[in-house]
Amino acid sequence: MSNLNRSRRNFLKTSGALALGSTLPISLVELAFADAQQNFTFAYISDSHIQQIKGNRFVRNWDRGLIRAVAETNLLNPPPDFVMFGGDLAQLGSMPELDHGAEILSALKYKTRYVMGEHDYYLDLGAYWEKLFGPQYYSFEHKGVHFIVLNSIRTYDDWTYHRWPSNEQRMLEMAGLDNPNGSPFMVGDEQRQWLKKDLAKIPKTTPIVVFSHSPLQKIYRGWNFWTEDAEQIQALLKPFNKVSVIYGHVHQIQYNQIGNISFHSVMATAWPWPYPSTYAQAEQYLPKLTVPMNRADPFFERDATGWQFINVANGHVDLNYLLPENTDRSVGFDKAAKKPVDAEYQSEGARIPPQSHF
Image (cartoon, rainbow, N blue to C red; front, side, top):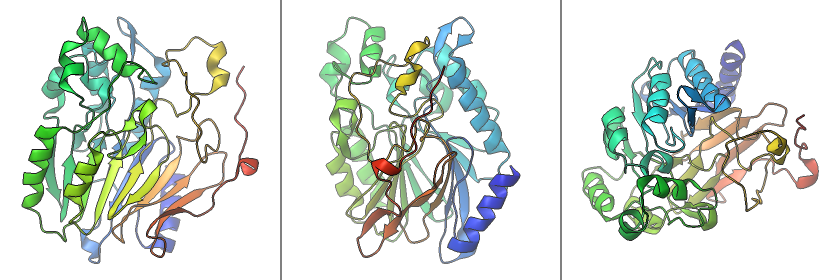
């Protein structure tokens, strides 16, 4: 952790505000305001996809990633005010998977809050999740910031309740990578009405941070990097001066600006997208990849792991990624362009080739 602390100090010297750091996909975020006493940090862990093989056997590299992320979060100095888990704790939503994930997360030393992912939801529509972690959507205040947690992975009632012969089949269909028989994610009428009432109590100058599992924007429908009612959610957030949406699900670095809303993804502890083709020789439990993803800047096959710093001092989330075996990458809000801009876009010829595995 000495490297983490040294890098963190160096970043603070140059930026005056922080962020996040780890050798694993955990995200430590500092919200920085004019009054330095209001600054605080929280950690973010997401997308562990704990999958049961049989009995007490689970896919080892996935649960090991979550165990290590928890251990490193507990070693962060200074300690975060709280921890967020960003969804997809389980792979197929079963009680053994959720129990195993909950047991691992119980080792965290800090107050932990939870976002629900589709892999946690579609077996029993979140019933067991609620017993373990509480409501599927809610809000809370912390040091002048209004935080909102949404269940953004619901879908149309006909697909959910009337199409499948069993709950297990429904879960398998929604867990498919390309979602051929799936249905678009959405927040839905019930939560939108709740969100409208929740925001009505908040001054427009209050910083808003929204946690969702899907992006609350429309990126790529084929992989459900998509929220069907995204524009309606964005319209409710439009009156506020400073809004950040932080989401999981995509297992990669993404950033976008729509109006006053900055969008940023966090990374996964299970695997990065796209899945490395070099792993095909070994037995694995990954969903079958049928559509190759054309990413703007994939770096190398483990580009979804690394250190990242997040700065929200100017009301927009600026990220500095420190990636092992790769050139650092910064994504910051450009006032002239009025959107996040990659400080050094890596052309295809400059990228480091994927590693080979034998």
